[in-house]
Length: 200
DNA sequence: CATGGGATTGACT
DNA sequence: GTCAATCCCATGC
Image 1 (cartoon, rainbow, N blue to C red):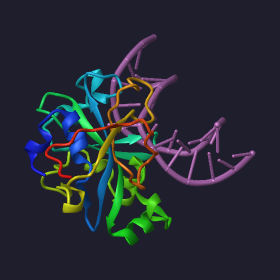
Image 2: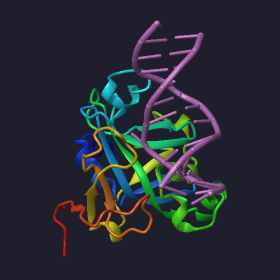
Image 3: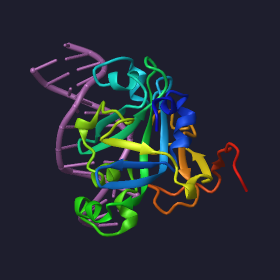
């Protein structure tokens, strides 16, 4: 994915990333769940303004923002919007694609559905850590490629973000409808995101 | 310099 | 359903 893909409103990039493939080394998976974050709402780290921690979010688009959550997990985001605007898409779940045995070894379990079904799980499975913060997603080592043909017309649903206490009402979580690899089920009343030139 | 909170997970009742 | 683990960093004295 080139830089212009990320240099757009985060609410466009977040659903567009569903169905794309995240790669790191010998492991990869199709993105099935994302969340959008923007400096104008309280749940976004960039809400506090420019600090050492948030400087990545305010930097150029197409860069990885990786931070530690609850002292244990590394969470991966893709920085979006023009430099100077703090916004990013959190990658929340993958459908494992390649390197399954490596993922199983790193995760210490066998079930395919448990390998990448959460933001902290997928970083462990793909060996993504804090030192990847600020790495360029357009050149690697972590890269995101466009949707494979079979994911081109994936139906995407929107509902509330998970695990946050502030601005929790915003429907900024985007999931592949019917995926069995999500971090949590999608509510039945979730809205379908309109697609562009979607075939029937 | 001390404190507190958090975009989670897995183990346990 | 409950709950602890554990680290980075923003904030306040």
